[in-house]
Image 1 (cartoon, protein in one colour):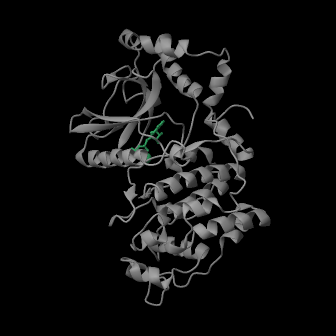
Image 2: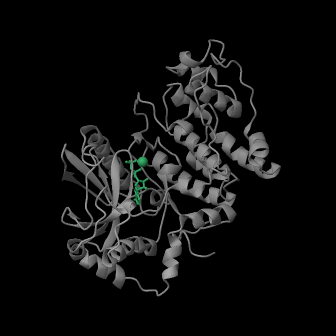
Length: 422
Ligand code: ADP
Ligand code: MG
């Protein structure tokens, strides 16, 4: 998939832009690979996102760079919300086979929120952790919406990242160094396909890096680092009790200015707001809808709206039915504005293939299907129900959500160590 698909094939130890030495791969997405690099200018580790060199991907990436830059110019470092948004440290481009690879430099982050939730067991994380994460996401959105006038449009667990501490990051590099010097092949997850072999050339290229990661490591307790790599353990402890988790909102590849007349369908399906399904335009309130879906998912380990295609109806129509079940009918005004309304609704306001939908309500779902106690379900559903108002104009803003009693009194400190003992 490298080269052909437009990804840049990289070998470990290579130096990019005269400054960043490639240490290992961190992950990949549909349009990029992400590499941990050692910034030789600052002596820090960074995450380098290298976008495919195909024309369409390059255009999107340049949009993301411009968006991140403009966000960075707003507000000050004191804005809590701003510090919860990934910051672009630098950007440059590299020549590729089909065109140019746009490269973006970020801080190294940990896994995304998907890794915290036990979806198989339908087990959510401790409610205190849900509150602290949702609070941080809302702070980021309050800054993004109100100070930057930007809609994220793709809020979902994959795009909220856990922060990690510098020991964790150094351990990632040490892992590579140890393999290279003990002659073990590199792990597939660390490299491009087919380049796991370790030779003396590689040792030579990583000489300086070896000094840095071994020299900079102060403690004698290797166990501490080993532990911090065990995401499975983190997941267990986050389910059990409160932890100080720090998160950052990322992936601004789809973000748009408020009021931008955007004809494409935004958002990933389960997190898609009803006005988007109906093609009725959208604003910041579309992000608020997704936050509610995210909160429900973190707390229950189940996706709130998971539309499927059925014999009688299409996915969007089934999606609308699920929404109406939890949130009530779609108001006339919204149906009137929707460019696609005619596909799903009769002129009487019932669904074309599914007819009338009975409302169940969120509290009942939390109690009956997710094992919540009545009191806790009541408080949580009260918080969610406002954000899940089918009428986007009636949804609270991020700042208003932050004042809701469900979040009030929510305290957390900003330590970024995912796995130190409680
Ligand atoms: P795409 O836009 O191509 O989907 P993403 O930005 O989602 O790319 O990144 C792809 C993957 O790379 C992520 O799922 C994550 O595993 C990893 N990743 C991205 N950014 C970072 C980062 N700053 N630190 C560590 N890993 C990252
Ligand atoms: Mg992605």
